[in-house]
Image (cartoon, rainbow, N blue to C red; front, side, top):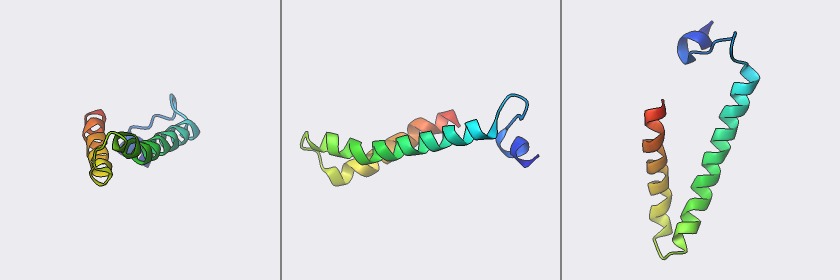
Length: 67
């Protein structure tokens, strides 16, 4: 199965539905963080235009070791 080879999906211990819901939840959480974090930090006087890419880069750097 292609999912087993590419993603390490084990059908004996995992369910596709659970993995899809978990992935969608993570994606929506990251969208929320990217939208809200610059606004919250912008209230301190920081440049909102620079906070969005800074949040995205910091999230990517923090996520890479988990992959």
